[in-house]
Length: 467
Image (tube, rainbow, N blue to C red; front, side, top):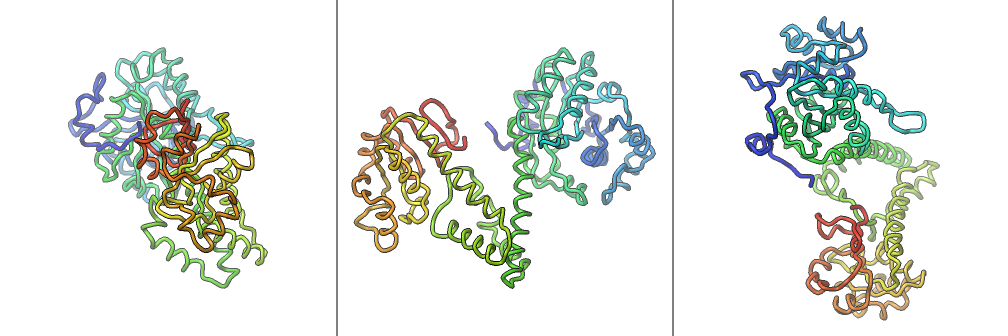
């Protein structure tokens, strides 16, 4: 399971070591080869050498190798030139085109070659494959335990399906037994790359059943204040894409709001300054847990209002349009999970748009109920906060107009729902956990829209919407 590990505790834990030890000098430094003298590779190499490690940079481009060996940077980046000049003069950084020599003289290889996009949008992995082959051939006759650590941006499964098989085939050895493998995504921004390396916002290490490589990487990052996040290799591969997609979404959101604000005579920078000042909801983990669709009296109507304002001002709002489309897609995904069970008697746990409220406006659970009834399913609903006798005003009118026969659908007790339904759709985590003892012993298929337990994964009698 993916988790967080204190690097000092893990380093001092002898059970993490499997076989062999990295060759360390008296100061506890590693010997590292860095494949790819591009943006990520050269910054990583220079910073690691500055930290006291002996680094060999490897590249097929002889011009880059010659530049680096003369103490000159192959790219423009603030403070990089002086850092390279210093570590080359000190003898801690050198460059070569000889992969075999680099691997045989080091214990860790960091692979930082490019993975550009092809014309159809797919990932170009030929550079990664070539380097994996070179490293595999190089470690075929080595006696030390060499750790191959990929930093190139790769889709989840690339390590498992491409990199590791190449390494094993060309080396004649087994990954995690005879040599190490890990994925170490980078989060460097051009223009602030050295500052990002020296003060990382997060450190992610992806490793599977390889305690020695994990131990080495934890030691390599032990001096940083950020606590390393230890994930599976696939998880670490996915984190990089989640970060970049989130960053791109934030930029597009800010730009789209800027266009709307300008059209309405508002200073967009003032608006966004106030937005980011809220650390409780806006700049926080709030709303960033995958699950079911959003609803309520604010988000759906306010996004619709912004889209309308954009149309009136002749401004396209593709991101806001996509937000509602994505929300509808999540409702459709939940509906498909239910219908795929082949069962006809469905029980909904939760009807309001979120726990601890009776607000039914734009509730995605209410939408699910409507669609099930429309398709001829037998339906029962339990929500301790939704009682027809207590609902008033717009909230009551909204429910009875959407579900005219709601009185026949609501159940007073969870046990009544459990007795009726073949499938339980959990839209309210608190309601489910509060009544979990009542549900024990009942042979039900559970459709989980809210992550009732982090250890549960989709199986025969349990289907999670995002897990």
